[in-house]
Amino acid sequence: MKTGFFAGTFDPVHIGHLRAALHIREEAGLDRLFFLPSGSPPNKSGSRIADSSQRLEMLRLAVKPWSFFGVSEFETARTGPSFMCDTVKIMRDHYPDDDLFLLIGSDNLASLDTWKNWQEIFRVVSVISFKKSASDPWRTDHLAGFSEKVILSDAPVLEISSSEIRTRIKTGKSVDLLLPASVQNFINNNQLYLD
Image 1: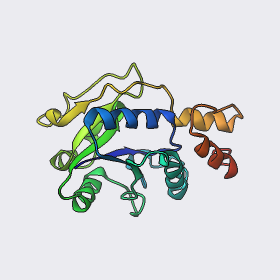
Image 2: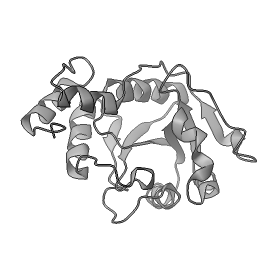
Image 3: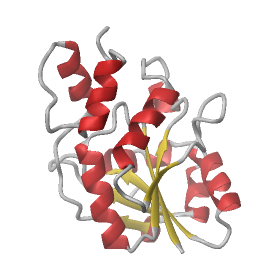
Image 4: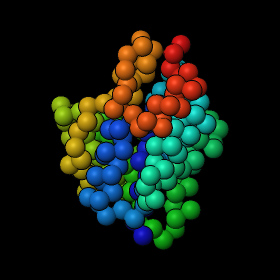
C-alpha cells in the first residue's frame, strides 16, 4: 500500500492545501493520504500558531468529504519540538509494510538540508514536493546522494497562504473561496485569528 503524509502547520488549512493533496494523491497513486499537522515546529519557534487541537479539528472538517484522506496526530500528540527525523520513524512503526511518502512544499524542500538528521528522513520515506508559488525554484542540488528520492509534482499552484488568510481575517476582509466552508465556520465560531 502507498501511504502519504502531507506535513505542514495548517494554520489554517485552505483550498490550496486540498487541491495539491488531491492532485498528488492521483499523480503518485497513493492509496491514502494523511494530513500531518506539526506539533511544535522548530522552524517556527517564537511564532504564535493556533492550538493543535483547533488545527486538528479544522483538518478533520476539511477532509471529511474524502474517504482516502485522514488526519495524523503523530506530531501533535508529542511534547517538545517536532522533528521530522523522529516522526518518520513513528510512521514506519505504524505502517511497516507500506511505501511511505512525505509531501512538502518547495520552500521546505529548499531548506531540507537544515533539518535535524535530514538524511534519516530519506531512509524511511520518499519525498514529494510541490510548488506553493509559481516563482519558487526547484532545488535538489543540496540533497547530495538523496535527490533521486525526491519526486517533483506538477500539482497546480494556487497562490493562497495561511498567513494571508490570517491577515485577512484579522483585518475584517473576506476569506470566501479560500477555505472550505466548514473551516471558515469553525474559525468564525471560535473567533480565531482576530487578536
